[in-house]
Length: 319
Image (tube, rainbow, N blue to C red; front, side, top):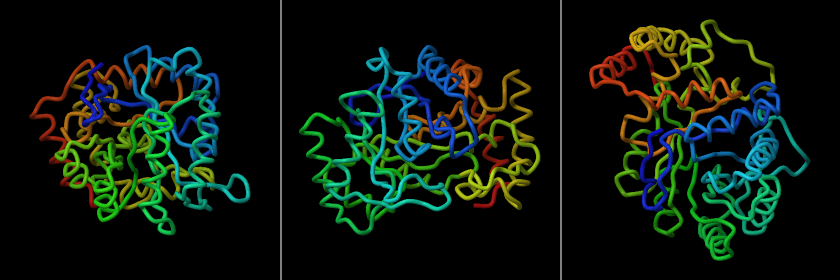
């Protein structure tokens, strides 16, 4: 495993983190709980010391699975979860959305609910998942500071915020970590990640495998269940971008064959070697996928191979 200093937090974290959205088993197809727990254990056994989850993943199911998996292993990982989303009428389909709420009282309830599901007394990194335009950023920042003082969280940050909101939170002193999508098929936030990386803020990229499309698992346009989050959250499972990604995969296939490795490892190395993110989220559904993903850290792409991939991205992917 390869490790990096995580911004100014003092943490030294694995270059790949375990992303657990799919493990909730409700947003991206069914997942067996035993397989999910085995996947988490395999990631840890292979050197991953960073796990990312959120109450929105499977409407609490992902946090519960992570909590079960970390029983007796909590001190082996840095644990990240999120806040800022609530459900007024019980769980809803991802496609129907939920209410963004980063108010003081709401976050105070959200943190206690997450701690209970995760079976822990503290969260190492607590991110505001999505911006809430109805709550002043000052109120949210003060709430995060209150939770830090209470010992319930250690570091704070955001995911999916706009640049002006980011600047405000940076000035309010609660921006230890920023997290945005970052992969070959989504470089829309690359400049923002680089800007805050250069400021010393810890950076994370999610979707590094493009929900599986950058593993080579999809060679024809998929037809997901109507409630599957991949229908609306990603634009590359539909034409014309799907065909663009298939052309990019021709280059990834060739490089993977030269190294005699799965395509997923090429994608993971491209993301982690770009020098823009400190840790990249990779999702797994079982122990076998965990073994494949972590083995990517046993080798590296050459400068020439990175240039070949970048050229293929520029030629084929329209942002």
